[in-house]
Picture (cartoon, rainbow, N blue to C red):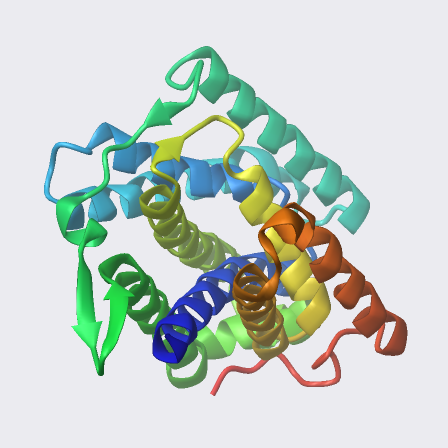
Length: 291
């Protein structure tokens, strides 16, 4: 029972950490609080629905392709012309992109919520060290854990990661030292697209449905987790998302049935208490570095 809870809590925490890194990365590089992030998750989720009859790895690959394409198109059409704009203008632009993509989805491919049949292998349960564990929880933990390790390697061990970290520290200084905006910014959107696709695929597997507004809650989770950990630190954002996910799983297991509906109220009350003590976030003093 304890092992089952730990796997669920760590898996949900890893999923939330992916969502928060996607928010914090663009905020660090561009100063962009991207409220269209939920629609990138929606793009990946819709691909899982569209390719639901294909093997799950194929559908997952197509989810990555869909989300990355939407991310790059939105960067080129909406954010590229506004690179030198102030953060408020960028935020308003992201709202516009979010509403446009959500409305487009609602008027075309997702006029109503679509059910996605669960993958047979994900619905199985296995015995692990005497505990009855869901395969879905194990896949969530493994997939999100691998992605977090990949981001850590990318940011800490590659030339692109060094440039992304430099741009997040001081974009103008990085540009003067040879960091190319036309490489770094699209690369950040590609990374965010991959992370959102993985998040969308896991959410579809857990929820069993796809809707035009399904990206709203994950986007809010990403923003809240990043604020909790510290928007200026990728490590802090990942920590904030992980703690948010683990706390969610803990409340779901501890709260009485008649109080489950108030889970988010308890969760955000605790978040407010933390931010009152440390309004800059848990690791805001750290540099943007993943190592």
